[in-house]
Image (cartoon, rainbow, N blue to C red; front, side, top):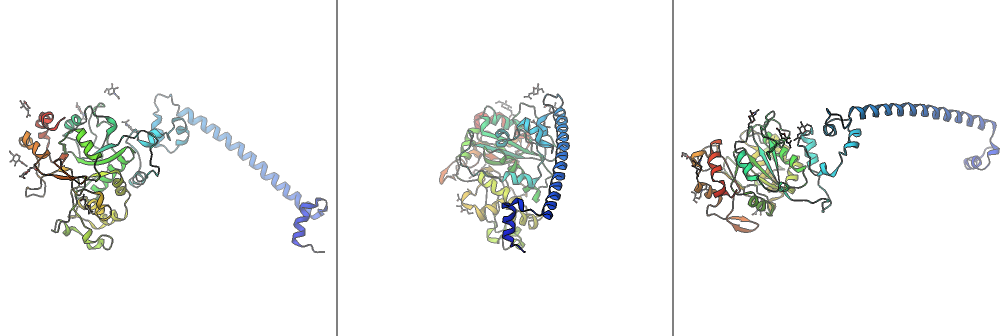
Length: 402
Ligand SMILES: *[C@@H]1O[C@H](CO)[C@@H](O)[C@H](O)[C@H]1NC(C)=O
Ligand SMILES: *[C@@H]1O[C@H](CO)[C@@H](O)[C@H](O)[C@H]1NC(C)=O
Ligand SMILES: *[C@@H]1O[C@H](CO)[C@@H](O)[C@H](O)[C@H]1NC(C)=O
Ligand SMILES: *[C@@H]1O[C@H](CO)[C@@H](O)[C@H](O)[C@H]1NC(C)=O
Ligand SMILES: *[C@@H]1O[C@H](CO)[C@@H](O)[C@H](O)[C@H]1NC(C)=O
Ligand SMILES: *[C@@H]1O[C@H](CO)[C@@H](O)[C@H](O)[C@H]1NC(C)=O
Ligand SMILES: *[C@@H]1O[C@H](CO)[C@@H](O)[C@H](O)[C@H]1NC(C)=O
């Protein structure tokens, strides 16, 4: 007699006594296979756990915290076997998350830019956040104006600034461990002036500086830049500004629109195209946008080729297209282009006088700042060669206030 499926299922649960001979032999087979699987499982489990035990013992012996030759912090950042060591070192501490202790890392650019693009959704910070200005130096080699900058930072609140230096790879800044520049070189790569590699270096500086959640304003400087006001003035000017200082204008000549490539259409139109000095100052929000952009950066990398100069067009154009109202459209770094030459005027020892530096600070012109007209237009100036250092150091206290 054929039983319906439902009865069959119910029968199994309700009346164990009705199990047939065939049923019971199947159950026996099942029981045996379950038993075998169980035994094999136990054996494998025991074997691997004893292996892990040995592995862990070995690891913790080798990476003993008290071992004099092992810098455990290094393992936290650099080796793939981080789990064991991090449990001891607490690599997930807030401390190193909100501000890396050591600027060296092994992230590739795409990894770094991704990390730097992360934005907290929570508005309050679970720590005391003092807004910092990140001073980002892009240099080929030494910083001849270093003693001037040292004096500029001397005695200032270290919570209010941070320093980042991008050099050519292999170059090491020779500074003592008491210098504010000590340990501030970021992992750098090759740069060719005038190529997109320069934009890459700018983004690399921004991204490294973004890893410190307290950095609020980001200013790009070169080895030939000097500060022309003291630190408190520079700090308050930048932190208090509602706008970022990125020069941006439409230059109809061949040095402006002439560098536009129609292959950038339709994403970038000629009317979007802007030009401006590379020496920018950015608010954190815009810095994050710059390191996060792939689409427009890629168009510049592809089509802004020699005699286009991506560093003079990419950021001004990108900001103009999407964040125009956040930009002051002027730069805070003075440079003199009045000389008829492909390079701006450069100042050496003989040019440095009190009245010259005064004229940089306040040249009877007014600039718009938070919708007001104020006499301070520039905070930094370029280009100064190494010989200008001595005479500048001579007049800092009388003229520049530091
Ligand atoms: C670093 O600077 C010190 C003095 O400032 C000098 O004695 C030393 O030779 C320099 N080292 C290098 C590698 O340039
Ligand atoms: C700085 O270097 C000196 C010797 O060059 C050393 O004695 C001192 O401990 C170092 N200071 C720090 C904070 O590393
Ligand atoms: C940062 O870490 C690197 C490698 O781990 C080390 O060589 C360097 O001395 C460290 N720098 C500072 C300033 O501690
Ligand atoms: C800067 O230019 C943008 C257009 O790109 C404009 O929207 C903005 O108002 C200008 N900023 C100031 C401060 O004038
Ligand atoms: C700097 O001084 C030299 C010599 O006095 C002069 O020829 C040159 O024009 C000056 N440069 C600038 C940019 O003023
Ligand atoms: C200051 O203004 C005068 C006249 O407006 C100009 O000739 C001079 O180049 C300016 N100097 C600087 C350093 O901007
Ligand atoms: C620095 O100033 C002193 C006097 O104030 C002067 O004697 C000296 O020549 C100046 N040095 C330079 C390099 O200008």
